[in-house]
Image (cartoon, rainbow, N blue to C red; front, side):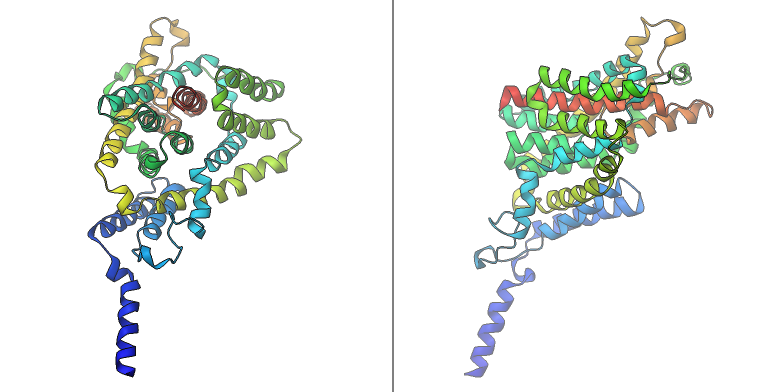
Length: 384
């Protein structure tokens, strides 16, 4: 009797283990998670994002018996992971991230040279180009809109929009968006070299004018009102972005600005990255749709990067010689802040060690953040 009792319990225990419930798909996703962690640690590709996402993939793909009622999976109502995932599925992590971005971002470059806003707008062509291709491939309009926003290279915006338009595709969209953000140093330089000449890469831009404190305070107030009156559906992102920037610039809320840009942003980034990673359960993630999403995201990101560079070249045709813009800052029109601006600066220094483009590139870079949020608002307004 004791032997039978022991055997039955051991058998029941075995059926609850991950070894018994494992499938080859689980091991594929575990390998992807380990690859993300390797990229973050060994290659220094956006470690603040890829480490939480990669480890989240490991958490989300530990196999277990879903019929045992353990309430541990991220898609099981009431589980701890499911509660943490509400910040993603309900879309309230992204506005908090935007609050932090606003609190840590200096908009002086854009205020000093407003025409750089046009570069950020031009880079959004990738979003609408990907939308048309996605609809041609058979995706529903709301799904196509959620996928297309990957072209903005803005993970929080992609999560926010997909939570509203295509919750079933959110895991693939979020991982795709953050993957291409991390691969900015790999993807963008070849595009920038391809579409620029050596002479264009050597263009030196005049130092930006000094921006007064009053201008810095007025900008987030006016910016929020203008953008949100045009696209009210972008209010959750744009409102928090400009609010964070006002905390930074007004001079009387330094503690709040520091909290928003440091502790709060770090906490939300940890929770967002981990739960996004955990949402990539093999059964939900390894589908034909995921392959299409990664392809469309890659295409959108390339179009966005190229559009920014080509727009600067076109814009230079009507600018006087003394005000020409170095097209190497065109790639910064995507909203991967500040990675894209650093790429512009590094490539400029490669061809001329005295040509510092970082502050100039920050103009279109922060404009890209605003532009992607506006694009998300437009898509949400039309497709929701």
